[in-house]
Length: 352
Ligand code: C2E
Image (cartoon, rainbow, N blue to C red; front, top):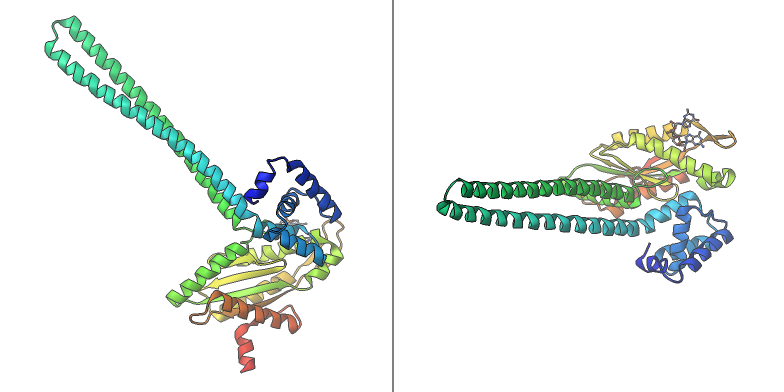
């Protein structure tokens, strides 16, 4: 959420904006789920913003506002705001911890200086001490000062231990937030942002190390028809089903990501073209091998098929060009009947 909308939500317009969001969701037949509410607050609070324009476009085009669509919008437009907020909170906790550690260190420092002075004083007094009672008083003073310094040191150690624990907890939390910001919430695969970053770095590695790299894009056949016939909830489950097959096959260093609505992408570093082709054929066959059931009615949904296109990185090729060739291969798979795997190089060979 942008800071401007955040500020509105804590100002005089807050309840009116919240009511408008609920009303607008109802008018557009959108469920008032927490995520939708967040999206619509952002949309109405900043209709000219990127998210506002995208929702406006979807509404004008009559595109359904499914759970999957909401997740995609959130992944695209909300996480940065969430992340910023989390980072701001983390900064506040760190500030607090650092200032209390710094106070404890100053206290310990002062206690050490006082102790030093007490020792110096005791040394002077010892030289002029006369008799056992004076010596006893000096020793007792030293003992008190030593105990005080010990107590201060223990307090400092305890404070440092608590702060170390708090900072470790914070760092784990931030790591979780970072992982969430890279994950597609519906399918738990990497999201588009994570994919873009990974592809860019894989292309750089291939360029600098001369290693192999392949990229595949995969699209569920007739997904829109499926959604219209069986409803969006079932559509979302089909996305999860396809994602679960991809997740099993694409173990690191491979990476599977949800790239768009019903489109997925896979990165294959360090594999030969026949290896990549075999893996993709395996994925295609496995996805189509099961007849799915509609959970609410037990209706037979039949098998889901996917079309796949892939391209093997040419020396010096960048991510945009590789993606463009894999996309062209995907469309060749669609054009030639769907439920198949096409390699971009085969298209080039055919054109030559
Ligand atoms: P989910 O519904 O959360 O299910 C997670 C996993 O639990 C499934 O992984 C499967 O291992 C197991 N599971 C859940 N329900 C059943 C069941 O009725 N019978 C059996 N034998 N196992 C079950 P899996 O198979 O990889 O599926 C991942 C996701 O794909 C599912 O998440 C669901 O969203 C979707 N999915 C898979 N098969 C179907 C299906 O036949 N119909 C529908 N509507 N969705 C399916």
